[in-house]
Length: 454
Image (cartoon, rainbow, N blue to C red; front, side, top):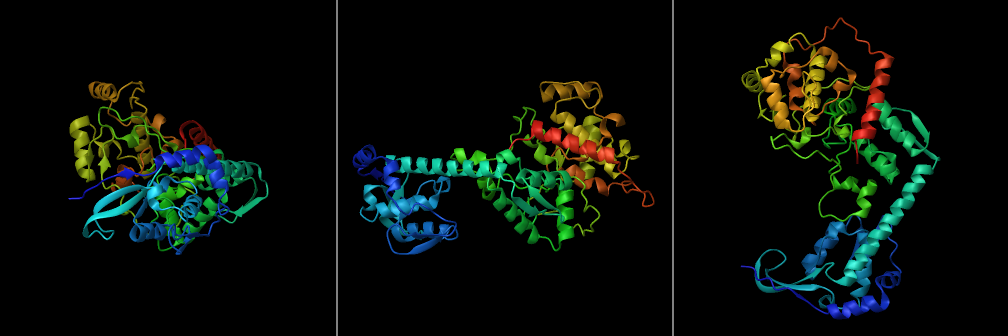
């Protein structure tokens, strides 16, 4: 049984310190508060030195194992190097007890049992620590805004494209626009990004390592990687990876212990419909063909680790792991023989059908008559009563915009090529007119402006 006794020392003294001198003065007195990318940070209590940011975890582990000190919410501290340098100076003349919450635990740092071992917690319950964290956050925000303004107006930028040999000169926004228009890679809107050069270098480094930008799986060669990213819709960065938080301005004015998700799905319906298909989010619209679409692939990555192995019904939230069982479900529950109604369609037409139906249900519209409803239950009841669980008229779904998935990693799209009659005639040459390509780009731009928010 672990005995935990918390006691805070000298809060009155520290409050007097803040009132008399002010935290701004205390920070300015520290001459070391200018951290660089590789900053030497001395331990708060001993002479051991750590090089940040690489040794961050080692430093925190050392503070806990050797000095019994824990820093609360350390991941949310802006400019951690400055924070540690400030407290290192303070602890040169003060003991931990004067600033920290003292705890008694019945275990040693290695987890073995020991009675009433003393530990220290440095947290923002102390007014001085709270003000320090707030000021550092304000400093980081000011620096980010200054850099952001520079990147929006600087015209000396020049960089070769991540995918082709084109060199883009001028604004960074022009480079980001090229990545989207020519290669359908949306990194983010220029007005929402900061430290763009570092972000692009990180993406380039990942591609050189044959690493998928989204799932970070490693591939044997570049053609296989590009085919994977095209087919899986992984031409984007993972919005839930904390490594990318520093590149989005929205993260500089908030404090949270969890990664900030930049997806905003519509509130889940009572019917049980998943959040993934509850709204149309533009960052799910990247499974597009690009100039490298003719690259060969052994498809060994098709069942990638951590990706869904279930197939969702077209008309309800029901899921199955086998396509045959799901088709039987659609026949029994919705009176639709999917294989029969799509038997005359090729693979790409089936993709359009699936994405059209997904889109309609996301928008709470009937697939057949296009009636709009306020609740999914009302839509489902209408479609069942009117026998509108169909694939809709060809004039509605046979459009370029429905090449793009409306559900991330849609399992149904992954099994369509296993159905008979999907292969295109090898002797037929398919030509996509320039007008269609232009229309695709216009639709993509409209969706980006209206539906996508980082």
